[in-house]
Amino acid sequence: MDRLIKLSELKIKNLKNDFKRYLYDQINWNSKLIIITGARGSGKTTLLLQKMKSKNQQAVYLSLDDFYFESNRLLLLIDQLYGNGVRNFFLDEVHQYEHWSSDLKNIYDSYDDIQVVATGSSVLKINKGQADLSRRADLYMLKGLSFREFLELHQSIKIETFSLEKIIKQHQEISIAINDVVDVLKYFKYYLSYGYYPFSMENKQTYHMKLQQITQLIIDVDIPAVESINYPTIRSMKKLLYIISQLVPYIPNIQSLSEKVGTSRNSILKALDLMDHAQILNLLKISNLGVSQLQKPEKIYLENPNLAFALSGSNPNLGNLRETFFMNQLSVKHLITAPKFGDFLVDHQYLFEIGGANKTNKQIAGIPSSYIAADEIKHGENNKIPLWLFGFLY
Image (cartoon, rainbow, N blue to C red; front, side, top):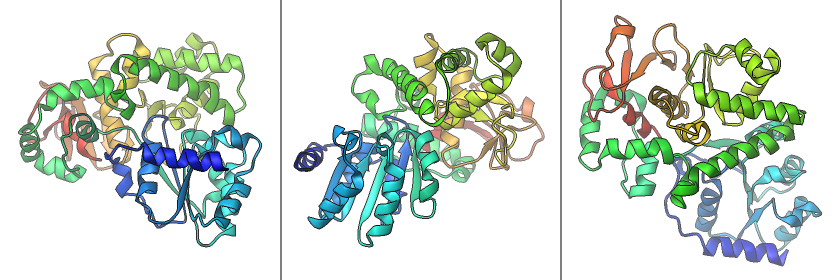
């Protein structure tokens, strides 16, 4: 136990990052049990330590992937630390600990005056184990960096967020003000390739290789931890992901995919659903309400633009990147579904067509509340809005 406390003190001492992710101010930090999920490398540990550092009361940080928890129960350790006066527990990588769900439930029920903030990188495993905690825990999802956050973290350029409604109504004034302080198009291009995860600042040269490794870890470890799948199925998923990385965005032909991968139609649909929930893919469907995992998506996207560079092995299609970026940024706060016309329907209200600087209204002409999100422009006019501006929603 002494070693774990020393490690906790060392973590806080070495915390030098003052940049706070968008989720920090959205969390109800007064809740008794908070669980934060998100992709590996999205900044959950830093967020956890930042909050712990702000606490005046005695607090401890515990990483549950430590070898200590291979043969020791968290519940018993919490009891010892509670006896020593600790009331705030910050638990990292809880999905690595076999008894995480049942122990958190017992801790919640046994102590009235403590707070537990926990993080987990295996979204699938956290969601499966959350059933026992559904009435107890506040669950939050931390996504990767928005374009706005990227500018603040990488260039120390701090700009406020804007609601979708404000962007639609005031995009000309907003875009002029932002371009006065930063060369937007220059940094937007860089962001699409390198800007989604905070750890890109560590080493640009190895960034895409690390993204490949994270993706393999999700398929090799995270998905098999919650689904009974064999090695050939894992190989098929990797092959499927590579094929998709070459093709997205596209209207999938499931039969053709199943023939290329060498597995059944239902297996393809299940694999797509698993990779969607594991934050490798984004599936665009007609409706997100009561949709079966075996229903074919209208389009398949990688979860974020950086993955396209990491997985494709070449320069991705520009149209692919534009649509991937739009869906990725909008889906954090809005419902995105497939429309009859155009590319995306947002909140059943706004229709968007995505394209380049010369994109016209032809495909959405006469449709109310329809807009163009255009790349490679600094400023828009009328219903044509700069694509990059949708990176300021969070």
